[in-house]
Image (cartoon, rainbow, N blue to C red; front, side, top):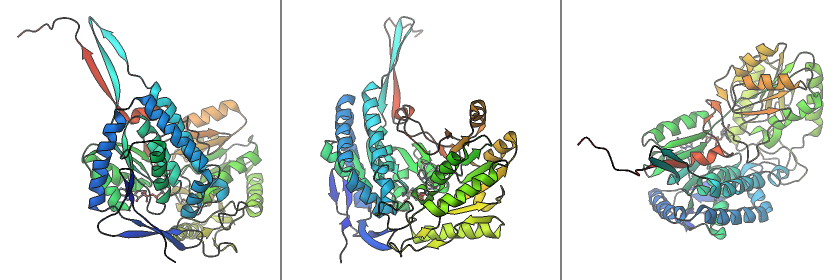
Length: 487
Ligand code: NAD
């Protein structure tokens, strides 16, 4: 059976490359190639820049309210096509349908809707200075590049294009080579909604295409989502033309469970923050610090619920709540970390092996895995695994656990479970992380800015401040009296 071949999406339509080079995309739940994609060669790259220049000229000339109206049409189409788009995400990523159906498209659409609403409300300032005055304009940057990871492909494309387009920029987006279809679907939807051709372009490929974007002097900004190591390369390359950067990188986030917490709620948070999207979420609380007084109760409930309530299998089955990891390579990486945990002396509470569910026997599944008796210096406690692997640690003292939680070069997220309202805020204020939850974990509404401290990132996505990251301020001084000149 022949599989479809998708071309790059440039200037409002699909455009064939000249080299004929393609790459294959595999459904992680079956191990089968489901389609091929053409790689953006030099011809496509040049066309993308020309297209984005024209797109920018047309789009930035529109009023914010016109742009807003068009983006809201795209939001409506995204919601109408929810199920079709959710299926694309399930087949590309291996994540469960029951998640994609209510989260992936929805949270992407929410962010475009949020920024479409904000765009006309963005105002400059004016101030009187003596007899004169100045005013400021919020102007778009020009062409912005987005580079995405594979865990939430459509959502990431929406989170990057929403503020960029609302502010009047053109975008060249490169999805992950593991999950390239969602961004193409979004590009088609933008055209259908009335976004002018050239405003949102999709180029396809792996690191080389990403490197071209980060180095190209016509591009004013790069918004990147991916690993810390790749983020450093992107930033170094972007420095060559002094591009603005937003970095949404990895994490190794702590969840602190105090002895007055609702333990069942804390277990729910720990499971969501380690097993949702089979553990492939950047903000996951992979280090769970539990107070010694509730430690046994916590791990007993965690073990029971993990062993009884998780259903792995064909991700399109609505009953399935644990999908396949993105690739064979990633499955091996995650299993390698599990081996390392065992070698370094952690105790396996549950899980630890590859899975071959009857309904998806060839998929890249890993059992939901919990390690206890973990120590702070173990590899599984220090490094991002990006799979369904949780490390549980015990603590006794508040100040000590805060220091342990902060003892990492990462700082994406953190959480606290306690019924003591003063402790909740006191502790969370001391945790070095950009996204924090109290008696909750993982929710990330469009209104809330998200991004990392330390090496987990630079800049923010979502929330009002993000619109500023996609504009530049022009100050205009107006002389109202004669110039006093010594010459
Ligand atoms: P990755 O860094 O391997 O790849 C991300 C993207 O960068 C891909 O599109 C890839 O093709 C591209 N790329 C690779 N090398 C490049 C280079 N030298 N120059 C430019 N682009 C290059 O990350 P991944 O494996 O796709 O995603 C998983 C990682 O993403 C995890 O670390 C996870 O924590 C992180 N992540 C972070 C967030 C966040 O919001 N903070 C969200 C999702 C994922």
